[in-house]
Length: 147
Image (tube, rainbow, N blue to C red; front, side, top):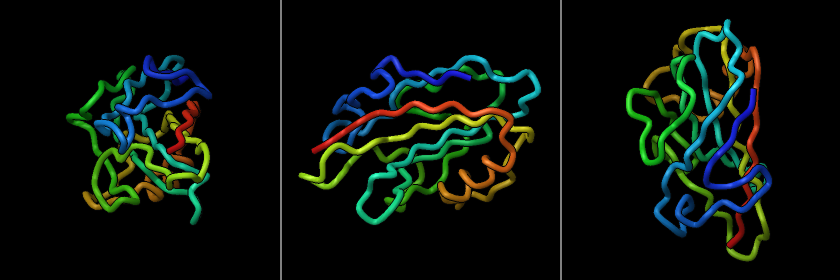
């Protein structure tokens, strides 16, 4: 599989509008090469460079397997997990000031199950753990951001 964004290149800087310093919008994401046997998809975004360990910014799951992109600003009809900010949905990059450039890892999973079966208060690490257990394929997109 391949995961990409029109907003930034793999390994490139994430524009401010998709961060806490901007409008905190969901970046446009699109993908190709989903295995035909996939029954659903899940997408997670985390910062492995956070001072206290990996910080989870977002997880959206139970995405129908025929979907090939996520639009900016909304994930209507899809399930979103509680992030490490304590809110459901996307929380954009917001590293500590002066801490240098952080990597924001967007990972798409093609899954062998139609649903992860998680309740409405699922947290991002739980989505990531279950998605990893059911992954048929994965694709990564890395964006960088510093304040």
